[in-house]
Each structure stands twice: as structure tokens, then as C-alpha cells.
Length: 109
Image (cartoon, rainbow, N blue to C red; front, side, top):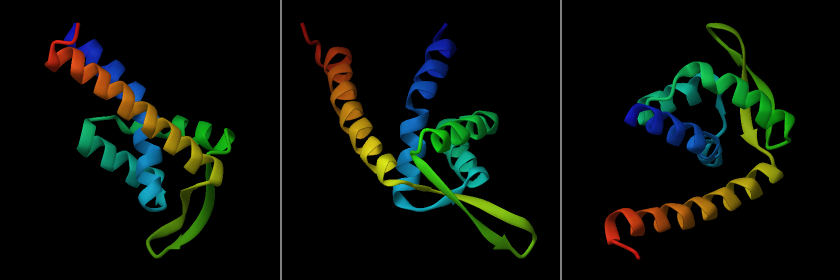
């Protein structure tokens, strides 16, 4: 059962992690997927549908960059709406994770 909890935690934090990565620098989907795979063990297949949804929701914008070793790469960057969403999610995460830490590690009543 612990594996199911870990999967749900990762899925719940995935959008926040993608927005956080894009808040630091523009990136293409494979690079985002690689960073998430290294950091939290998230599979590559989950990134592409999420990137399409973020674009459809207006949280990210795309642009093409020529690649010397193949077709142009589609880069993603946060839109203004995406920056605001990221800040809201980051605040919510800080509050939520702090409350969970207090309960789990602090013996809150």
C-alpha cells in the first residue's frame, strides 16, 4: 500500500513541480521529464499530457527553437497567469506541507 500513497503524492505535486521548474527557466518537455525523473522518480509519459493541459489552461506558452541535431524543439515558458498560479500553489503547498509536518512529526493534537 505505501507505493500507492507515494504515487498519489507525486501526482498531486506534479503540476507544482513543473510550474516551479518553468519559473526558473524555459524548457522543453523532455528536459522537464528528465529532471522530474531524477528528482522524484516521475515517469516521462505523465509529462506530455500535463504540458498540453497547462497550455490549454493558459498557464504556459510555447515557442520553437531550432536544434542543430534534429527538428526544432518546442519550449515552454510560464505565462503571466502561470506565474500567478505558481505563486498560489506554492503558498498552498507551504501551508499544507507545514500542517502535515506538524501532525506527522510534531504530535499536533
